[in-house]
Figure 1 (tube, rainbow over the protein chains, first blue to last red):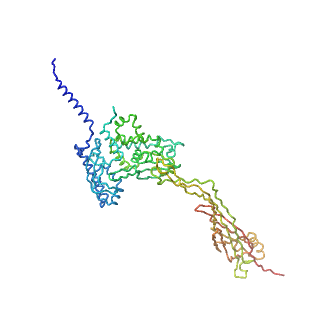
Figure 2: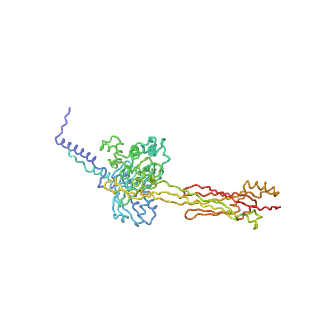
Figure 3: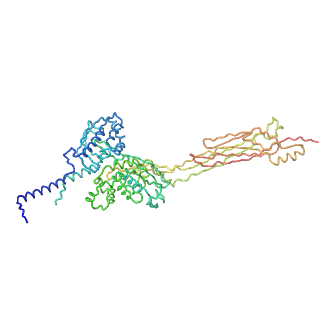
Length: 185
Length: 419
């Protein structure tokens, strides 16, 4: 049997390497799915999905009261799933009346901030929307929108704005992921 | 295919075979023994509203108000059955308190079991069951989880792992309005319609029970006065023998009908506001206006019973006819009855009538210079038919037939040889 001499230094280096690798694996697993500080998308699907969200929100918040409601709806629906288009259409009358009464003439700049959830065919994006002027009933020109986009046969399309309890649930989930639970054990 | 299976599942929930009409079971007012909707249900139609719990908040203070719509039926006992559309039912299940779902007595047949099945069908594939079971091992089955959601003990939104199913659900509701899977029962919903889904639109307000203390209506009919008689001349001669040229005789008919006295009692109600504490802690009281019985108000109506038709006739009696052809014929050869029967009114004469403001009706008919050509006794006959009485479109008394008789003599002068 041949003896292989291993120096104490090599053993220490090996142990350090093992610890570093293990910590690396743990760190990767513990990392949130999406890096909050990184606003740019990291892969092709995310890029397409976020672009779909940007296009839809720009269309949705591009309001010119002088136009017909149908013109606005057509622009929004071109960026939406059929069901998403139907959802917006269902509530469009009241919304457009409000826009016309307030003589809304607004354009929007939209920046994807973060992909906050996803499935194989759906993504939820947090978007920063900046308006050229406030919309009727509000004095804000900057706000956050949480939108669901769906992968369809025609590519990624806007589906809907998330409901308030859905947003709260996603934010709560993120907080639990980012902040390790300290249970003292 | 998945959507087709989902629709089949939802439609399967509609089968009312599990419902057994029982007297104590309010569902017995809804379905017959064959599981069909009872024919005495009042179909209230579809009601649409925009509740806060179906509003989608958008950035910049905007909102997208979705329609909540319900097809509703009212039972004979004033219970209301509500059939929400699929999307409305989903949002009701997600907001059981705000939507009023919690106030219903459950779904047809098996309480909330059907609703749990519904939720499993429309949203079950979009729940992160792995994470749910890790965080809530107390739920041994999905049904227990959905039951906790419906009881308001569990927030469902935390465990949704998909988002597109909500718009798909909404699209199903829009494209198939008949896709209503849940029958929700609201006991006494007609009385408390302001607090049920869809509100009071179309709800038939239950009729107030007639108070027993009001007496039944009464009708008093007074006897009319009716007559027919010869008025002139005092001793009429057969025409040809009278001093005037064919004077004949005048016959007058008269009828006076007192009003029918109809006494009825009107129940008088007064409106009072009734308030009940809010079901929500700290909420404003729920008030409604209810009618309460106050008194019986007596009404006395004098209803006119007018003359509808009047007929008068005169007929030579049989004894007179026999005397003419018998005894008179022996002394005056060829004596015969010229005209035994006369139709006086209408015919030779006419009648007119009317009613005064007190409800008394009169009619007078006359036939003047009737050419009675035969001597003897004439029998007069007067027949009157009234219109009957009505009040506020309701028949109070039927038409009456009245009659009166009279007689008078027509004379003849006969020459006689005095030896």
